[in-house]
Amino acid sequence: MNRVTNLALTMIVAALLISFAYFAYQGHRALSLAGGTEVVTSIGVLPYYAFRSFLRMLVAYILSLLFTLTYGYKAGTDTRAERWLIPILDILQSVPILGFFPAAVYFFVSLFQGRLLGVELASIFLIFTSQAWNMTFGFYESLTTIPRDLQEATVAYRVNGWRRFRTLYLPAGIPKLVYNSIMSWAGGWYFLIAAEIIAIGPVEYSLPGLGSYLIRTTEKGELGLTLAGLLTLVALITMMNIFIWRPLSTWAENFKYEFGSGGGTRQPEGWGYRLWWQAPGFREVRNGVVKGGAFLARAGSGLVKGLAPEPEKWRRWCRYLEWLRRLGAGVLGLFLVYALVRGLLALGTLFLEPWQPQVLSIPKAMLFSFLRLLAAYLISLAWTLPVAIWIGHNERVYELLTPVFEILASVPATALFPIIVFILVGLTGGMNLAAVLLVLTGMQWYLLFNLIAGVKSIPGDLKEAAAAFGLRGYGYLRLVVLPAMLPSLITGSITAWGGGWNALIVAEYVVYAGQTYTAFGIGSLLDTATYGSGNFQLIWSSLIAMMVTIVLMNRFLWRRLYEMAARRFKIEV
Image (tube, rainbow, N blue to C red; front, side, top):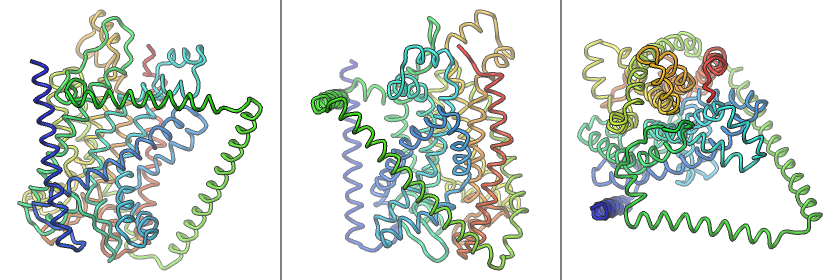
C-alpha cells in the first residue's frame, strides 16, 4: 500500500511540475511576442511571473545562507569579532529595503548600464537584504547557546577547524536555520514588491514577477487581478511548505539536544517528507546525489594526496598562500576605507546644502512611528507567546497550524490594502489604526516562529525531569518553558523590531486605485522622498535617524537582556 501511495505521490508531483512549466513557458512566449518592458497585468502570465520571482528568491536565499554560515559562525565563536560584527548586523537590519535602493541602482544598474542583468542583480540584492539578517541572528543565537559540556568535549577530543564546524556548530544551528529560513522566505515574499519595482524619484526599473504584478494591479484598483496574483502566490507558498519546509522541519528535529533515554517527540512525517525519502524517482535522485558527492569527495581527496608536494614545498606554498591572503585582505580593507571616505564626503557635501523643511520634522516622525511599532509589538507579544507555548507542546496542532501561519506570514501587505481603504480608513477617518495593523503584519511572525523554535528546542530529558518532579501549570512554565524561551524571545524581538521598521515603508504610505493614503511617520517621509521627489538629503537623514534609534535600542535594551538571560537562565545539560 505504501509503495502504491508513494508512486501516486510521485506522479502527482511530476504532473504539477510539468503543468507549471508548460504554462510558464506559454506566458514567457506571450510576453516575448508582445515585446516591451512594461509589466503585463494578465492572468495568463502569472505562472511565468511566479517562476521568475521564485528564481530571484532562490538565488537570494543561497547568498543569504552562505552569508549566515560565515558571518554567524565568526560572530558566535570569536568574542573579539563579536564586539563589532553584531553592531554591524544591527545597523544592517535596521536599514529598510528602500535604504538599499541607491546602492542597488548606482552599483548594479549603473555597472551594467541599465541592462536587464543589472536590474535582476539589483533585485536579488534587495531580496537578500530582507532575508539574510534574520537567518544570521538565529544561527548566531544557536552557537552562543550550545551546552558548555559539548564545547568542552570537542576541546578535550581536539576536534578543531572544519571538523568542529561540521560536527558541533552546524548541527547546533540547523533547527534555527530551518525555522529562520522559513521566516526569511516569508520576509522575501513580503517585500517582493519593493524588490521588483526599484524607483528613485522619476527613475524607475521594473521586472516581471509576482511583486510587480501585485503592485500594478493594486495601484489600478483591479481587485480581481490582484486576487488572482495573491492566489498564485499562496499556491506557490503552499507547495513550498508541503514539499520543502515541512520535510526540512521534520529532518531538523534530529538535531535537537537530547540526553535522556526517552528523547523528544518526533514530528509527524508529511507528504513532502515521504516524497523525498520514500517515493520512487525522488529517492533514487537523492541517493544518486549523495553517492555522487561522496565519490567526488573521495576522488578529490585522492587527487590531492597524489599531487601533494614534499613537506618542505608544502610549507612554502602555505606561506605563499598566507601572504596572498593577507595581501587580498589588505587590498579589500583599503577599498572599503576608500568607499567609506568617499561616502562620508558625499554625505558631508549633501548636508552642507540648505536643509529641507521636511528634515526638521524627522524627530516628530520618529516618535509617531515608534509609538505605532510599540503598539504593534505589544499586540504581537500578547498573542504569540501563549500560542507558541501551545503549538510547541502539541505536535498535532503544530502540524496543522504552522503551515497556515507560514502562508499568512508570506502574504504581502498589499493584500490588506482594499480592506484598509474601505473599512479601517472609512471608519476611523485616518491611517493611524491601519498603519498599526500593517506594522503588525511585519512584526508578529518573527516573534511567533522564534518562540515556537524556542519551545521546540527544549530537550526531552528536561520535560521528563519536570514531569518526574511533578512540575505542572505555572511552575512548569516559570522554571522550564520561559527560561528556555528567553533567548528566542530576545532574538525574535530584535528581528521583529527590525521587520517592523522595514514594514513602515508599506504601513504609512499606501497607494490604492490611483490615490495615496499616508500616516505621518518616518516611513511616509522615506517613501515620499524615494518615490516622489528623490530628495537624497531627506532619504539619508531618515535612514540615519532610523539606524541610530535601532542600534541604541539593540545595544542598551535587547543586548543587555540577552546577556542577562545568558547569565541567569542559560540551560546547561
